[in-house]
Each structure stands twice: as C-alpha cells, then as structure tokens.
Length: 432
Image (cartoon, rainbow, N blue to C red; front, top):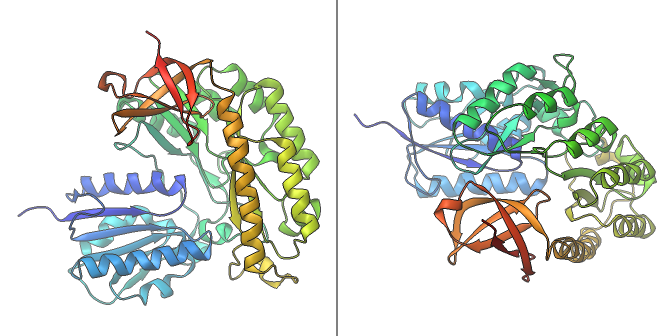
C-alpha cells in the first residue's frame, strides 16, 4: 500500500515557516509522503496567520481553493487563525481538523487517526492551553534555515492578538537550541535566521539571556552566518550590538519594529519606548556597524492618528534613513483594546499614507543598495535560477546577481559589486 500524500501551505511569518518544516519532518517520520503544494494530495495542512483581517481572508480562500481542487482531501488547519477562531474555520466546507498552536506536535497523529472526511474536529484551541513549546527549525528547501528560539509575547500591545494566539513568552534551553543548530549545519545549510514572536525576550522560561544564546550559537561549527529576524528596540542592548559588530558570523542586519513616529500614537499602541529611544538605538547600531541594514515596521491609520501624527512618522523615518520599510495599514482585530479607541481613520486615508511611505521606502532602499556599488562583499548564493542568473545576499542584505554556476550554490563567495538595476539588485563579479 502506497503512503498517503500530504502537502503543506504556510501563511505569515518566518516562525510559521520553521514550524511547517518541522511538521513536514514529523509527517515523513510517520510514514506520509510529502508532495508539492500544488500537487494532488490526500491531506492538505495549512499553518495559518491572523495578524490582519487580510491574513484571515487569505486562509479562508485557500481552504476553499484546496477543497475545490480535491474534494476528498483531508484539510487540517493549525496556526494563529486556528487558535483564535477555531469554530469559524471549522464551519468552512472541506475542513476536517482544527488544531491549536499548543498541540502542533500532535497534528500528524490526529490526521492519521482520521478515517476520512467528516465533520470538523476541533482540538485544544483555548488560550489557557498555550504553555508548551513546539520546537521548530526549517530544513531542506532553503540555503538559510529559520531556527525558532522563542514563542509567545507578554507585551500586549493594544492592536495585537499575538498574546492571545501564542500565549506568554517562553523558550527552550540554550543547550537544546545549540543541538538544533548543529542539526541544521549537518544538513548543509550555511545560514540561520534566529526567529521568535518576541525574539529578544528569550529566557523567560529558563532564566537564560538572549546574548548568551547568541554566543553559544556563534560557536557552532558549520554555520557561517546568523541573522536576528526581529528585535524590539527596548531589547536591543549595547551588549548585543557590540557582540554582533565583533562576530564574523552575525550579520550587520537588524529588523526593528517602530510602528509609529508619533510618541502620542506609540502611547496609544502601548509600545515600550519613545521615538527618541528608538533613534538612539539606531544610532548605536550605526556607530558600531556604519553600513548595517536596518529594516523598520510601521503601521499607518491607527485610531486617532491625525495628519500631523502621520507627518511626524514620515519625517522621523526620512531622517533615520533605514534600508527598508515594512508598511502595514492598521487592521482592527476583535478583542484588542484598539477596537474601543475613538477617531477611527478612514481606509482610504490609511491607503494613501501607506502609499507615501512605500514611495519613501523605494527611494531609501535604492540609496542603500547603491552605496554598495564598487565595493567587495561576501555573498551566499541560493539555488534558484532565473534567466540564467543566480542570486544571493551580502551580509548587509543587498541582493546580488551573477551568471548561474552550480559550484557556487550554497557557498559564500567574495564578490565585487557592480551596477544596480531597477529592482535594486547589484551585479556581482565573483573574485577567485
């Protein structure tokens, strides 16, 4: 009898990608055969996101698409949307299993126990159950791996459902995470992205420190590069900055959420810093690493955001000159304090403000990438080939293209950076 075929569909963040990859390994160990996301399958697993209403809608549309494509396939949904609104998902035609974030490790066993399609079963989707840690790292399909080091968040920002979807901040011990990094190295991946819900808050469970985790991972043989996926400005300490500046493995690449350049709006959001503190942290990074890539998250259209507040945000970001902006129009999430705030911003206004920041991002990112022209850098090339070219990233996250050479894939190469194209990609001349 041939094994049952299963495919996987990941929505949302890097954390979800690491968890989906781990789920796929568990299904393989359980005797299932993994197939491509668009291939016929007996089971379809969706790891959902719920950071915005658009993310919820995307999941619902995906469920309906999979069910239309293969009405007999078992559809299992886990992730943050499943955690927050299990009954809403269970009511969608085609869904057979809804499982909480806390019990992702049970997913393949729950699926194996299903005899076939039937009324949707919902398991453990209450917030109080969010206490365990689902260990996860990605493997097999990327040059870089995502290593989950932390889950949950204690910050309870006024617009965010993550505390409800992921529970309190918790983590695995450093020794266990080092073992996982060694597994990644043994599989041949050269770069690890350290990820979590509130990554810099690592240590709540074990009493350890994030800086101690970085030092331990730095000593793992076979890994050439590390990136910190995202870190809150109040957790980006001088000690962490100094360590990343001195380590040959930790790349000069920081993703720091801002959300607003107005201190009044930051207060309404319940963020834990001011614009002055945020700017001081960016200055500290650049003092130690002058050419560091700095990416910033920003929300537009938060309740009460006036035109003056938005102009403060725009001017603050223009002055900081980050390498990239991740821009999100505010999305009202049921059960969060922001729902009850007055002075809602019209969607058309939020869209216009997002467009202005996108234009700013295009300019700033182009300027950052252009500064690399004429310099030399270390580039890790990835396996994807487009138009006879291969692509990779410098330590500062400039994307580089060069003629495809299989011998250079998954290898760190010394490259001279040349002209930049309209997509901000730099031409790379490989130095022997």
